[in-house]
Amino acid sequence: MKRENEDADASTDNKKAKSDEPAAPAPEDEDLGALVNVEGLLEMVDNDVDFAVDLLNDALGEFSSHVDTMREAVAGKKDDWPLKVRIASHSIKGVAGNLSMERVHKSSAALETWGREREGKASDDDLDAASASVDRLDRYVGQIRTWAETARETLEAAGAN
Image 1 (cartoon, rainbow, N blue to C red):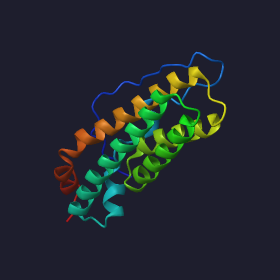
Image 2: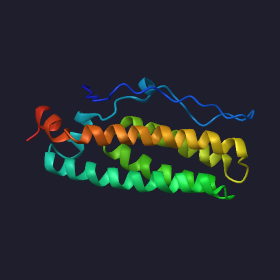
Image 3: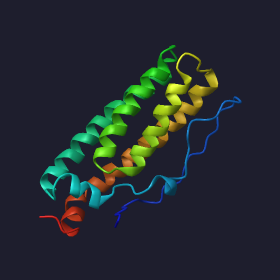
Image 4: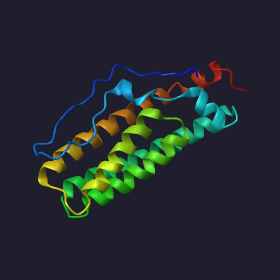
């Protein structure tokens, strides 16, 4: 399967939590697949470039809202912050998976699992790890936002109608 990856050089932020608990997931960028699997995206929209671009822009707005929710939850340090991180990352995971945004999908899936494991037992050290993971996810969203600026041309060049 041909994968299009219009990814600028993005280094992984590997901050570790200070506790003995596992840090929030920080896989290497290349382990997360393509930024956007263009072939998969076009297949999902039956090669309709206009529809793909509309979905892409809608998704980016939704992602920003969910990232903001996660940042507020972590900054608020209330007992339910892992639940809020889990729910927001679950929403991102679903949309990203449907639109073949592999890095965002895999990163949000890992963050969702990590949040679930900490519900009701998160420590202050987990806050730092969560913040680093949200920053990493936001960086991937930013890379897709940059890619989206020329997505129409990329999608059309990939042979869409």
